[in-house]
Image 1 (spheres, rainbow, N blue to C red):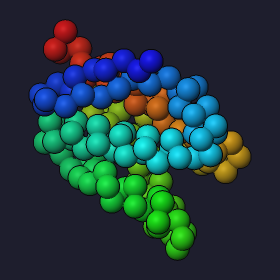
Image 2 (image 1 turned 90 degrees about the vertical axis):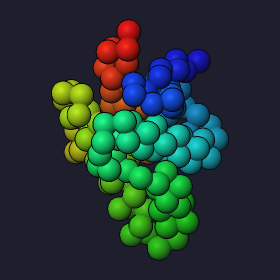
Image 3 (image 1 turned 60 degrees about the horizontal axis):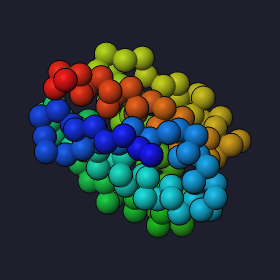
Image 4 (image 1 turned 180 degrees about the vertical axis):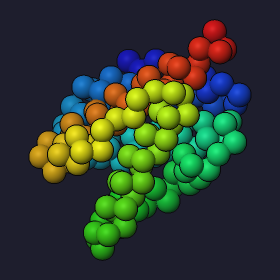
Length: 137
C-alpha cells in the first residue's frame, strides 16, 4: 500500500506509491488508473507548490487531467500537458535539491513502454515527498 506523508507547511498529504504498482495498474486498467493518478500527483504538487510559495508546480490539477484526456482528441494539448507534468516533477525535485529525472528517458518510455512512464515519474516523486517530510520528523 501507499505510504501517506504530510506535506510540510500544509494540511495536505502526499503518497509514496510503488512505481512498479503504478505501472502495473495503468496497464491492467487500460489507462483508467493513469487518469486518477495524474490528478492525484498534480494535486499533491499544487499543494506542495503553495506551501513553498511557487506556482511552478502547477495550480489546477483538473486542467492537467483535461489536457491529457479530452485534449488527446486534438493531440497537442495532451502532449503539452504531459511535458508540463514531467517538468513539474523535475521542478519539485530541484526545490528539494534532488537530481531531476531525465527527460530523454521519459520520452523513450512514453513512446516505447507507456505504462513504465508513470512508474518513472512516480520514482521521481517519492524522494521529493520523503525529503520534504524530514523537517517535520
